[in-house]
Image (cartoon, rainbow, N blue to C red):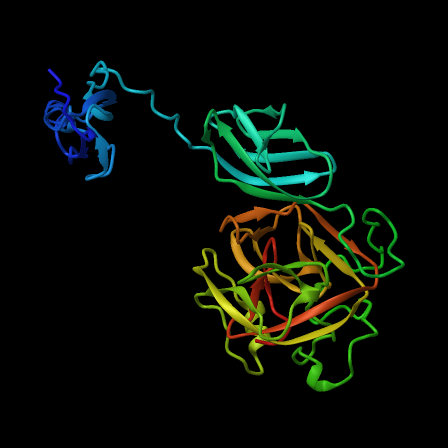
Length: 386
């Protein structure tokens, strides 16, 4: 029974007791003992250790209340979690043993070559699902409009078949010459030698912009003057991300490579040693190198390899007949040579190769201590003798 106390001066008052940490039953008894009424609310829990415990102090301790006031508190009510059949196990993810050997985006068609032991159930471009594609065990193709760079992810249900990778397409890769107005690549000049040798064929057109200053001539005895350089719009891998060659500055740090056995030392025979170097299985470790000098000039020919633009003299690391070595861009054999990719750390096919007879702005880069750097799509030698 709840007792109500009335004094000659009106309704008596009491202080709110501490019921935090009590059980549901203890809380009721404590409130009734001081003349307060109560109302309780249950909150389900799967923690049996706190069953019937008061969740929290509902009103601050020692708050003045009138006898007969109602205090509402919440207590925990244990509810056992649902039991599962111990023999049940979710189906395992399918094996992710697919791989990509090469990819290209040309016009409106993306082609991905590789080994697809599980066919895709979904393909996302820049995180958005595409509607349709064609796929078999060795090739996936789909349509893609526009230009620029995209990221591709191929799924088997919710599980990626392969790591995300990038592709790009630019029908006009950005030669600076105003006279280069064609929206695509023009056929190479028939007079351009199909296989320039060392020293270069005298019929090879020399760039008139090459300086006469012997200190600026970076080639050894018997070499025809010319500069190893990249197009101004070619993207170079720096420690801060991809940067256009034209925006680089002395002191910038580039992503480079330390190759076991490669002749980095300088000297009169440095160029010959670098060109004679080869390795069937080079041990290549990613390293950092620093730009110590930059030169800007023009080149009469542009060589486009997988979207990167070089002068005809620039050295590119390729793998040919199982041997890795540096060759001039004009010496690349696009049908059989492979280039080394920073993104995938593998050798990849050449999907775009053009030699364009057009005057264009180029940038020569001198970096130390490693005389090579990664462009967006391959590893190249820098602009000076090693």
